[in-house]
Every structure is written in C-alpha cells, then in structure tokens.
Amino acid sequence: MGLNVLVVDDSAVMRAMVVKSLRMCGVALADVHEASDGEEALRALDDHWVDAALIDINMKRMDGETLLRRLRAAPETQTLPVIMVSTESDEMRVASLRALGADFVHKPFSPEELGDALTRVTGWTA
Amino acid sequence: MSTRSDIPGPPSALDAVLRATAATVLEELTFLLADPDDGASRAHEADEDEPACLTSVVCFTGPRTGRLELVVPEALATEMACNMLGDDAATAAQQRDATGEIANIICGNVLPALGHVAGAYHLEVSAPAPAEHAFAAAEIAAATLDIDGARVDVRLFAEGDAGAVN
Image (cartoon, rainbow over all chains, first blue to last red; front, side):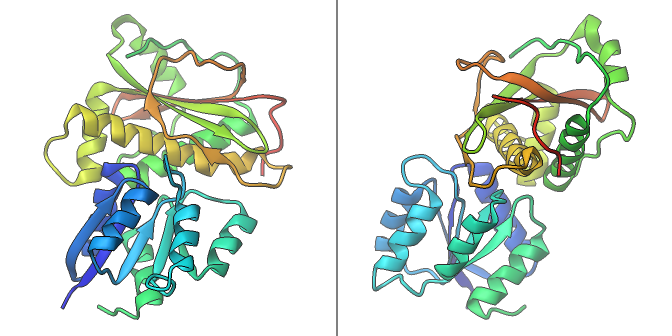
C-alpha cells in the first residue's frame, strides 16, 4: 500500500518536483492530490483522505500558515501529518509552525530531506 | 522579454551573497552549474546579440520592502524547466512557472542576509514582468552568472540601505 499525499504549492513545477523527489527517495505513492492554494487544499481534503500533506507557505488566496491553522482547528484533520516546504528563514515563524505539529523542509531541498521528513511525520520507511 | 544593462562597479559583500545563493539554488533545483568565474566578464561578450529573455519578479514585504528580479534567456529557461520536471519538453507556462519559482527561492534564501531586523517576510507570488516595477526601491545587490555559456542576471532591490550581511 502506498501513501496518499496532498501537495499544496502555487507552482505546478514545484508540485511536480515534490512528487518526483518523493519517488526518487523510494516513497511508494498511491494517490497524489495537488492544490495551488489553501482553499483548494481544503476542498481536496473534503473529497479525499490523505496520509500526509506537504504545504508551501507563500500562496495567493489562502497561505500555508492559515491552511495549517485551519487543519489543526478541524477535528478530522487536527492530527494530519503536515510538512511545510518553504524558503522561510525566520526562526520564530518556523517555531510557530512546528508548535502546530508541522515538520519543516527548507527550499531548495534534496529528495532525501523530503523523504526523511515524511518518515518523521508518518512513520513511513523505505 | 527584456533587455539587460551591464552591472557597474565592483561586487559588494551582498553581491557575493546573492551570487552564491543564486548559484546554489540553480544547481540544486535545475542541476545546472554556474561558472565559478564571475559571469560579468562574459556578459560583455553577449551585448551584440542579446537573446530573448524571461524576467521573473518577486516582491517582498516585511522588515524590508523590495523585489528580486531574475533574468534568464528563454533557451536556458526551457532547459531549467525540463530539468526541474524531469521531462524532455516544457511549455511556455512551465518555463515561466519554473523561473518564477527559482526567483522565489533565491529571494527567500537571500533575504536573511539583509539581517539586523527580526520578523517574517511575505513574498508575493512571482510573475513575468517588465524590469521596471511600480514602487521605488534602489538596487542594493546584483549578480551575473554564466550557466552553460548563457548569462543569468539577478538583482535585488530594497528600500533603505544595503543592510547587514550575515
């Protein structure tokens, strides 16, 4: 059984890179869902069950931090494994995201960094 | 598309940070290596037959306000997008998306070098745009890279002084 994941990024190329990187580090993926902002992500989660979400921060309409707070406020997604994938360097902001139970991967990332983060949040192993 | 001017003056510490950051991001995202020599010398050679270019602009607000511009020849933008996607071809939209994301990541990684003010930056989604932008911000750093013989320009604009270099 592979993992169902949701990749949220306003760049379609970056979404493709995230999926490619997960596959490169040996993650068996089942269904891959994509969203270009937080609102799309919430709609995708209404329709699909996922094992983990990988979320960019800076996006139009609803950014990744707002999305994460919405996920944590909803009973059905409050424990969803989340990896924030971003260029964010402000330590306080990263700490606030971690306090909400999200892991963090800095862009640019290697496939291994993404795979390691997925292992941390889901317990998945190659 | 845009035209490019030569970058005057000797490189500053912030220029060096911008150049190193851009080279690292390009290498890690597109697997393309920047020539270790300063690309500015080759930039002069390209003046006579300047290729069509894509310009991506990332605006940022926060402790400082400004923008980062990335200018890439269209042929190289195609190669970058193909490498990022792992495909043999890339549409024009994918080229713009790829260069915009590269600009975004360079910007996000270089902003800490402005230092001395704590707080989070907000980066506006990048878009292809003319080099001239609506708000007033002075150029505080510039770098020219040579990627596979093609010239890539990165410029950082911000209000206020050049700031600290971490």
